[in-house]
Length: 162
Image (tube, rainbow, N blue to C red; front, side, top):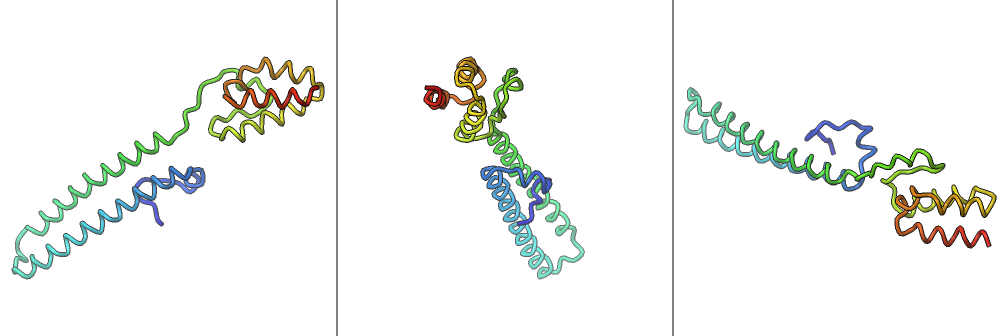
Protein backbone atom coordinates (compact mmCIF):
# COMPACT_ATOMS: atom_id res chain seq x y z
CA UNK A 1 0.00 0.00 0.00
CA UNK A 2 1.31 3.42 -0.92
CA UNK A 3 1.09 5.92 1.95
CA UNK A 4 0.42 9.51 0.91
CA UNK A 5 -2.12 10.60 3.50
CA UNK A 6 0.80 12.03 5.53
CA UNK A 7 4.51 12.26 4.83
CA UNK A 8 6.26 9.22 6.27
CA UNK A 9 9.81 8.18 5.46
CA UNK A 10 10.82 4.56 4.98
CA UNK A 11 12.96 4.81 8.12
CA UNK A 12 9.96 5.99 10.16
CA UNK A 13 7.85 3.15 8.75
CA UNK A 14 10.42 0.60 9.89
CA UNK A 15 10.19 1.91 13.45
CA UNK A 16 6.37 1.94 13.65
CA UNK A 17 4.71 -0.34 16.14
CA UNK A 18 1.83 -2.56 15.02
CA UNK A 19 -0.66 -0.06 16.43
CA UNK A 20 0.98 2.86 14.63
CA UNK A 21 1.07 0.91 11.38
CA UNK A 22 -2.63 0.10 11.72
CA UNK A 23 -3.41 3.78 12.33
CA UNK A 24 -1.53 4.72 9.16
CA UNK A 25 -3.22 2.00 7.09
CA UNK A 26 -6.66 3.07 8.37
CA UNK A 27 -5.98 6.73 7.57
CA UNK A 28 -4.72 5.83 4.08
CA UNK A 29 -7.75 3.61 3.46
CA UNK A 30 -10.10 6.43 4.52
CA UNK A 31 -8.31 8.86 2.21
CA UNK A 32 -8.46 6.42 -0.71
CA UNK A 33 -12.18 5.89 -0.16
CA UNK A 34 -12.70 9.65 -0.02
CA UNK A 35 -10.82 10.13 -3.31
CA UNK A 36 -12.88 7.38 -4.94
CA UNK A 37 -16.15 8.89 -3.70
CA UNK A 38 -15.24 12.39 -4.92
CA UNK A 39 -14.10 11.10 -8.34
CA UNK A 40 -17.30 9.11 -8.71
CA UNK A 41 -19.44 12.12 -7.79
CA UNK A 42 -17.53 14.35 -10.25
CA UNK A 43 -17.90 11.76 -13.05
CA UNK A 44 -21.66 11.61 -12.48
CA UNK A 45 -21.91 15.38 -12.49
CA UNK A 46 -19.91 15.56 -15.74
CA UNK A 47 -22.31 13.12 -17.41
CA UNK A 48 -25.27 15.23 -16.36
CA UNK A 49 -23.44 18.41 -17.29
CA UNK A 50 -22.63 17.30 -20.81
CA UNK A 51 -26.01 15.58 -21.30
CA UNK A 52 -27.80 18.83 -20.56
CA UNK A 53 -25.58 20.63 -23.11
CA UNK A 54 -24.16 23.08 -20.61
CA UNK A 55 -20.64 23.24 -22.07
CA UNK A 56 -20.56 27.02 -21.85
CA UNK A 57 -21.63 27.10 -18.19
CA UNK A 58 -19.26 27.58 -15.27
CA UNK A 59 -21.16 24.98 -13.21
CA UNK A 60 -18.53 22.28 -13.82
CA UNK A 61 -15.73 24.44 -12.39
CA UNK A 62 -17.96 25.38 -9.45
CA UNK A 63 -18.72 21.70 -8.78
CA UNK A 64 -15.00 20.85 -8.95
CA UNK A 65 -14.22 23.61 -6.46
CA UNK A 66 -17.06 22.44 -4.18
CA UNK A 67 -15.84 18.84 -4.29
CA UNK A 68 -12.23 19.93 -3.68
CA UNK A 69 -13.28 21.99 -0.66
CA UNK A 70 -15.23 19.03 0.75
CA UNK A 71 -12.29 16.72 0.05
CA UNK A 72 -9.85 19.06 1.83
CA UNK A 73 -12.20 19.32 4.82
CA UNK A 74 -12.68 15.55 5.12
CA UNK A 75 -8.94 14.88 4.61
CA UNK A 76 -8.09 17.35 7.38
CA UNK A 77 -10.34 15.34 9.71
CA UNK A 78 -8.66 12.06 8.71
CA UNK A 79 -5.17 13.52 9.24
CA UNK A 80 -6.18 15.02 12.60
CA UNK A 81 -7.56 11.68 13.79
CA UNK A 82 -4.40 9.92 12.62
CA UNK A 83 -2.16 12.46 14.38
CA UNK A 84 -4.16 12.18 17.59
CA UNK A 85 -3.98 8.39 17.48
CA UNK A 86 -0.23 8.49 16.88
CA UNK A 87 0.23 10.78 19.89
CA UNK A 88 -1.73 8.34 22.04
CA UNK A 89 0.30 5.39 20.80
CA UNK A 90 3.64 6.95 21.80
CA UNK A 91 4.99 5.35 24.96
CA UNK A 92 5.20 7.58 28.00
CA UNK A 93 8.77 7.46 29.17
CA UNK A 94 9.26 8.67 32.73
CA UNK A 95 12.17 10.96 33.39
CA UNK A 96 14.71 9.25 35.60
CA UNK A 97 17.97 11.17 35.99
CA UNK A 98 19.68 8.15 37.58
CA UNK A 99 18.99 5.91 34.55
CA UNK A 100 22.28 6.87 32.91
CA UNK A 101 24.23 5.83 36.03
CA UNK A 102 23.27 2.15 35.97
CA UNK A 103 25.15 -0.51 34.04
CA UNK A 104 22.19 -1.78 32.01
CA UNK A 105 19.93 -0.39 29.32
CA UNK A 106 16.93 1.57 30.60
CA UNK A 107 14.35 1.64 27.81
CA UNK A 108 10.78 2.10 28.98
CA UNK A 109 9.43 1.12 25.56
CA UNK A 110 10.51 -2.48 26.15
CA UNK A 111 8.06 -4.99 27.61
CA UNK A 112 8.64 -5.93 31.24
CA UNK A 113 9.93 -9.39 30.38
CA UNK A 114 12.73 -7.90 28.27
CA UNK A 115 13.52 -5.35 30.96
CA UNK A 116 13.70 -8.17 33.50
CA UNK A 117 16.10 -10.17 31.30
CA UNK A 118 18.39 -7.16 30.72
CA UNK A 119 18.62 -6.31 34.42
CA UNK A 120 19.01 -9.97 35.42
CA UNK A 121 21.89 -10.50 32.97
CA UNK A 122 23.61 -7.38 34.25
CA UNK A 123 23.42 -8.41 37.89
CA UNK A 124 24.35 -12.04 37.20
CA UNK A 125 27.52 -10.75 35.52
CA UNK A 126 28.68 -9.51 38.95
CA UNK A 127 30.76 -12.35 40.35
CA UNK A 128 30.57 -11.56 44.08
CA UNK A 129 27.11 -12.57 45.40
CA UNK A 130 27.27 -10.19 48.38
CA UNK A 131 28.19 -7.22 46.17
CA UNK A 132 25.48 -8.25 43.66
CA UNK A 133 22.76 -8.27 46.35
CA UNK A 134 24.00 -5.04 47.90
CA UNK A 135 23.99 -3.22 44.55
CA UNK A 136 20.60 -4.62 43.54
CA UNK A 137 19.01 -3.81 46.91
CA UNK A 138 20.08 -0.17 46.53
CA UNK A 139 19.12 0.15 42.85
CA UNK A 140 16.24 2.65 42.84
CA UNK A 141 16.20 2.70 39.03
CA UNK A 142 15.51 -1.05 38.92
CA UNK A 143 12.62 -0.66 41.38
CA UNK A 144 10.95 1.84 39.07
CA UNK A 145 12.03 0.17 35.82
CA UNK A 146 10.95 -3.37 36.73
CA UNK A 147 7.90 -2.51 38.82
CA UNK A 148 6.40 -5.78 40.13
CA UNK A 149 9.23 -7.78 38.51
CA UNK A 150 11.70 -6.19 40.93
CA UNK A 151 10.75 -8.54 43.77
CA UNK A 152 10.86 -11.58 41.49
CA UNK A 153 14.36 -10.72 40.34
CA UNK A 154 15.40 -10.06 43.93
CA UNK A 155 14.36 -13.62 44.82
CA UNK A 156 16.22 -15.05 41.82
CA UNK A 157 19.40 -13.16 42.64
CA UNK A 158 19.12 -14.16 46.28
CA UNK A 159 18.82 -17.84 45.30
CA UNK A 160 22.18 -17.54 43.46
CA UNK A 161 23.85 -16.04 46.54
CA UNK A 162 22.99 -18.79 49.05
